[in-house]
Length: 363
Image (cartoon, rainbow, N blue to C red; front, side, top):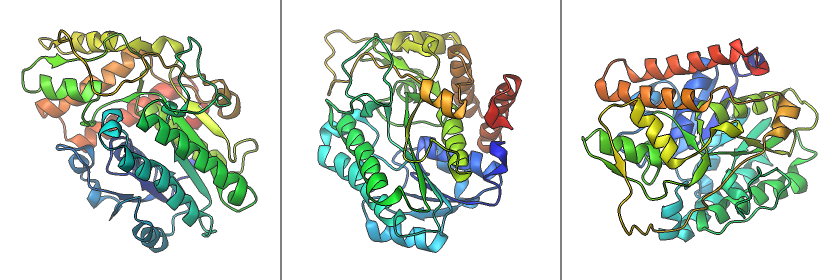
């Protein structure tokens, strides 16, 4: 898998205690990588990292991405060959409540990391995760391409577009002719087991349903490119592997990772699909609801570039995405199988489905 690039490699994940970071840590550990993480403590309880017992399986550095000295110490101690940068303030509503902290974390965090990378030639690859929210969203009916304008009407989106520009600037100014190869990734809305962040559709629903309550939904007609967490992670891992091998046309480039167009569903369609798999649960839209902070209602991505350069495609359709997500949470709630074992089994099942479709990264 991924041409065995990650076996015995030293890989650092920033934001490893988060939802996507903890899934990536499990996958890399299963690939035989020596994994370390640098992150704040998880802000949620429960949280995926602790449920997985990852502090016993990887090297666990705790610190703030805004703290350059702590980040420098972790990098210099571990000496990673490959870095996946995921540390971020990732919540739209929180960005309205604390815009300064959001910009500091997402923009200066990227600055701090890249400024350290450029002076450490043992770092061979850095995959920098920004967001599809980095695009200036005029709510077009077609998918955003990597060459489209960046921008942001809310503080979170603005911070992500700034972080993306920082990455591009550092590449052209310092890294283009260096030993370190970088890639920028922009992924659509990610769902899956183990996410308990506030103000996200799936975690809000799970928290309510696990207490026997109905969940209140603020934007039922908003459309998102829903994808399971393993989809963009497979893309990040493939991009990292190909950068490590020095494939032409990748260094310094940005790539979208999103689902097929059929997976662009409304919030209500996602919730109804979850309800079908979880009998007895309910959701509703409160009358006269006015949410704190506006999000764009329509967002689509074009993934033609990553298909051309990496032959990457999403594995799961919408139904399978919901199946994976609901089964993880029901397993957790009903205590059917140990969390690490079940999480790893979903990675294996995902890879089996990719193999049946003969996707290149599975080899």
